[in-house]
Image (cartoon, rainbow over all chains, first blue to last red; front, side, top):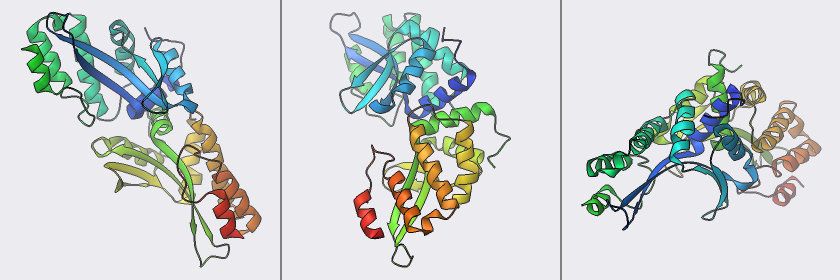
Amino acid sequence: MPNTSVSQNVCWYLSGYADGEGSFCVSFSPRSKIRLKLEVRPSFSVSQNGDRSEVLRLFQKTLNCGSIRPDRSDKTYKFETRNLNDLVNKVIPFFRKYTLMSSKSIDFEKFSKICFLLKESKHKSKSGLIEIVKIATSMNTSGKRKYDAQKLFSILR
Amino acid sequence: MPNTSVSQNVCWYLSGYADGEGSFCVSFSPRSKIRLKLEVRPSFSVSQNGDRSEVLRLFQKTLNCGSIRPDRSDKTYKFETRNLNDLVNKVIPFFRKYTLMSSKSIDFEKFSKICFLLKESKHKSKSGLIEIVKIATSMNTSGKRKYDAQKLFSILR
């Protein structure tokens, strides 16, 4: 569970911060060794300039999971959690309680849906994996995506 | 005063959002027609992608001031307030109550100090204006500044 000793005010503050600087992401990696050839990797991350990493530590303490590391691509630090159990048991319940107020909440709902499908091992069937790809490729439409839906479906075929 | 009908939760959320995406800025413009040749322009702004401008409307409603407009430099919208009375009576009291938790709070304190100096017309004396320039040029050190302290002092001389 998220850390319950953190005040409600801090939790709402972190929700606002995440609405601006956070990212709910589902990425895919081709993997020759797994049956359906495609690994699904959900993550929640928040970026910040190195000199202001105190908020990232507040995320780590409040969500009681994740790690903080320098982002080599630019001069920022990143808080990130990729562990499915942490996402399902800590991150998603947190944002269910302290809801995002922008349309990023739509991405959060899709992210949440995918995490629960993974938790139920739906990605181990082709139809389940196709559903996950469809949901994921409709997310974060403003960002760039390494593999588009067509490319992912072709790997699955 | 800020709008008091907005819930505490929303206010803390907006504080977090502003800590990530907000900017307390003091800019300067050379003006031949004013006595000390330098105009001081404080502003508080929050940027956001156009498709997620709902949070900007929440800022406008909560702070009960400011305007929202497209930012021509990129595909974003910006909430901004430049009116000194609104900054002193609405924006600053809001962030005194719902405090920023990152080191952006240091910039906020400097911004607040400058707004009160302006409110007391200290910018109308050379010594007051020099103090304002010194504080302002120590702010937002990660961003770019059109005029550095040396350039501003040379205009003042």
